[in-house]
Image: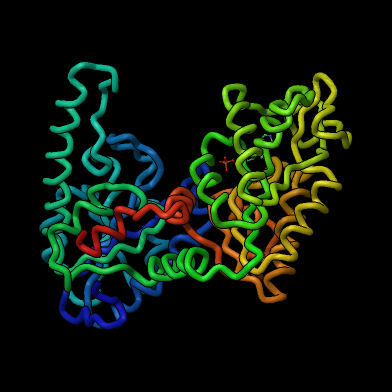
Amino acid sequence: MQKIDNFNFAGLKAIVRVDFNVPLDENGKITDDTRIRGALPTLKKILADGGSLILMSHMGKPKGKVNPKMSLSQIKDAVSNALGVPVLFAPDCGNASEMAAALKPGEVLLLENLRFYPEEEGKPVGIDKEDPNYDVAKKEMKARQVEFAKKLASYADVYVNDAFGTAHRKHASTAVIADYFNTDNKMLGYLMEKEVTAVDNILSDIKRPFTAIMGGSKVSTKIGIIENLMDKVDNLILCGGMTYTFSKATGGNIGTSICENDKLDLALDIIKKAAEKGVNLVLATDCVAADSYSNDANTQIVPVNAIPDGWEGLDAGPESRKAFANAIKEAKTILWNGPAGVFEFDNFTAGSRAIADAIVEATANGAFSLIGGGDSVACVNKFGLADKVSYVSTGGGALLEAIEGKELPGIAAIKGK
Ligand code: AMP
């Protein structure tokens, strides 16, 4: 596989898939530019070599239609400021041949949101999966996706993928495009390389004990990774909203707490499997229950299996926080995905805070800690602790799929598999 560090971009046009899907406020102002900053090492290297840059990204979910609220033109100036050079803008990413051809060394062209074209994701639009014509529509769209990818490829001499957050998707710009560059002219960017190394650290060189913390709202979206982790970890902390599915499954009263009633058997199965595999499963025993889903709700600390009617668990209680912290502090490898409570409300951050603090302490004592997934990253950022853990991944789904051991299409495409 070609390495970016070994490549000289002088005189070449590089098309770089970046993840500029940054959050914007209602006035289109960037509220967190982490993703732009994350791409800078790759972009600066290409410019410093004397190459030119064609930047492509998605923003939001415009579902194949032009939507000015998701236009990348809104971030053009921020990209320009971050790079310290002017940035040109191509308002139609599928029709930018002339602008791309005119680029000179050191110049930068930002393409409009890739997802304004349904071809980017390659999913047929306006047709239901149950429709008898769905398969034909899908085939047609896949053919259009190839043409779209070829078009993007035609703009440049070299392809660089630095968008880890979308590496688990087989989209035109993240995977299909790579087929139109030879092996020497396609590579991962620095950010991607760092992400891959962080995952390798977790998978190949596990220092024990290994503690994984899975939180968030639902067990259903995390089941793949939970089952996979069961073969790897010593301690598995399951927290956040999924706590109440477990509590109900084991006969608890959970009031109005979030619960997936169709996943009760799954919860029991996880408890059984953990016991069979000798994994120390750490579930919350108490919670901060609220009388409404709001920051200003009245609260009380109650056992997770005795939540009064009309009350819902919105955060881990003090006894649970202590149990979580103990399982984290003894660890030498730590993976965290998903908050322990509704951390968006300041009054329900204590569980996530206890986890973050314990991870910081364990990291200071030599543990390798990897944090991924939008919400847990938002948590460590909110607590100002991002630089006190080993690695904060830019990927959510991509990170979890990589840790599940799946080969990510974005990486496989570069390897030429
Ligand atoms: P996920 O996208 O599945 O990782 O879930 C993240 C979301 O889970 C966050 O927005 C949290 O507010 C939410 N969450 C965490 N704990 C709870 C809870 N006890 N009740 C409701 N939502 C929760």
